[in-house]
Amino acid sequence: MSITRTVARNTLFLSAAQGIRMLLGFVLIIYIANVYGVAWQGKFSILLAFLNIFQVLASFGLPRLITREVARDAAAGNRFFWAGLAGQGLTTLAFMVLMAGVVALMPYPADTKQMLWLAVLALPLFTLYSVAGALLRAHERMHYLVYAEVASSIAQLAVAVILLSAGGSVLALAAIRIAGLSLAAVAVAAAALRLGYITRPAWDGAFTRGLLRQSTDFFGMAAFDALLQRLDVLILSVLAGEIAAGLYDAAFQFVKVLMTLVLSFTDAIYPTLSRLHVQARERFALATGKALSYGFILLLPVAAGTTLLAPDLIALLYRRPDYAPAAEVLAVLSWALLAYFGQILLTRVLMAGAHPHLAFQITAAMVGVGVVVLAGLSAWLGPSGAAWGLLILYSGGAFLSWRASHSYAIDFNLLCLGRPLLAAALMAATLFFLPGLPLWAALLLGAGLYILFALGLGVFDRGDVQVLRSLFQR
Image (cartoon, rainbow, N blue to C red; front, side):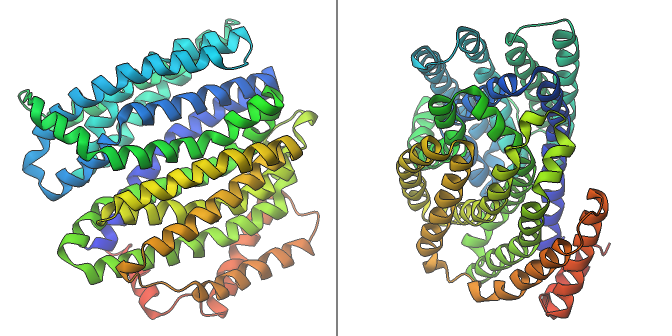
């Protein structure tokens, strides 16, 4: 199977896994928002922010390192699994204590703190899920992650219906996440065991310590990346309160879907880039350049269309009038998506190559600057300020990552984005002068217009057309 089709297949599976989780999770969030209001959505966004950050911190960068090493040497998978499980088990215990302590210091209401303390129990479950999942990613068996997400999402939805319909407190939100991770961890570990990637226990203290030392750069990059992705909610919730965090999260939910697709794509291409960097540097540079080009070509019309249709999208999802200010936030976040794509893909490129330390340094710098930028803009403009801060941060991170990856001679030029940008602008201008269209009609018309403008302006060259055709050939 060609590299293009392999990456496309893996992206499809990872996107399906994330998509299933997001779809059912989105149903839950919409239920919370429309029945319980902005404050409860703010609490739930705080819960997800804490879990996302501390799950990544507890993993200590080991899953990403294990994926890279096992992708290069499949026979070593069992040894890396047990070493990763032991090493991440130790770091997880440490960060469980740290999370409980941080929650105690936060200026949240008592029920929010109790919810977060209960959620600490999700961290050990994530340890098994992430280490076993690293083996499946390394062997490019991404479809098993889809099965795990199906089990997880069904469990979460079932627990949500039972507890929330019975009038449960906000503690039910933590129980939902714990139930979902339990089934996901069991499903992923069972798949890796069935495929023979996990065999007899192979405990090796020296190897585990060495693995933890090697994962330092991966840990730093992943930790700062996790902080960066949820720093906005944490800062906004402290400075402006849970209602402001709820409004921001209402807009972010739409962009989160697209960010997850971006992350699925970068996770899918990461093992391939790791091999190409060792085996074929020219193809490594070409694959990275094409990934950047295709990503921006697809995301530019999404950003332009979302900016134009933001009020309609918010009104469709949230039936309460107090959610109207979220439209302004969504318009800004749609452009932050472009910067996010550039930054996340280029940091994966640095990690797949020989410069994971640069990815760590760039992400650390973004977090350091982000605290100041997000705090200042959130205090000044509230939820909209947090969105502008995110756009500034990811734009700066993408620029620094691009500069750091110059030694790879990536086959990509920013000038090539002129035509797709013009096509997206023409699409948005046409929709602007056709007011009153139903949302579904505007979306379909916008997609059709962009394709026509892109073809007319020559966005896709002959090589691009051949690549796209290859994805659908048997």
